[in-house]
Length: 386
Image (cartoon, helix red, strand yellow):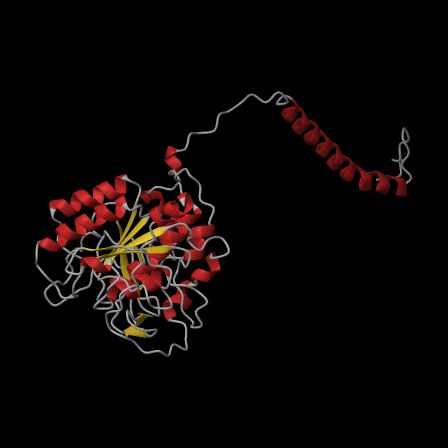
């Protein structure tokens, strides 16, 4: 009776709601690996790390948890807009799902596509109800709140494939995240007719890794905003990624720095997994120092160059920064206990060389004298000689 009563008091676990299905569908056929994956070849770093144990927060338009590429990869997140019950897993425009697929899509799904860090997990946070440019001051405030919430949930990397205006609330949230050791990766921004080359935020904040875009030939994408704040670059044109609804894939021919930022966030996840004790600045420096640098080392278009996943993870970088030659202390001159032998050896060699020369000169003279019958102590001159 007691046993039955105890069993009756144990409440059954609540059934977990199925992930929502929403957003656009895509083409189901994907026969070739996207050029961005061929260019970066993140699989070369996977024997060292796949990003396991790292959580990447995607603050965007939401992330689908039902696509085969993202099944099991997407955590329960949060919606800061009008769909709070969907926990950030409803992507009505398809942008955030493509971003998440590039960062941490599964491998081995039967299609030539995977994320840069397939061992990482995605924390979806929806702040973009659409992709339209907006001057609504609520957006940067919501992004700031999303950053704070991501930090509270234990995010290791935060991907910000968006741009907005730098309100004090956003500035403070970025500073708080960096102080907690969270790596922030953001799109440098895309040029529009009324926004030719204005810095994009939060990418332009100090400490945030600002990402520009390159094309298939490695050249700077014309729509990618240039500026001294650009830190690094990644594929940002002719992008392919998973669609929110169904098993298909969508193409974004015009691309954008949003997708370039996703590639870099994936590499940041690999680095954070391989080197968990690095702070955000050290993670950024590792990716910058191992990037495929431009000839001048850094420029306003692609920063320190195109991110290189294998080198970012495998390179053995010293903890001390290289110092200029003028800053290196002069070597200490020490007394040589055998110093007296050096001049003696030089003099001995000189005397020996001189004797050798004299012997070589004397030898033909002596031989010629013997031919004439010269003997020591004997005169050869005669009175008839005249």
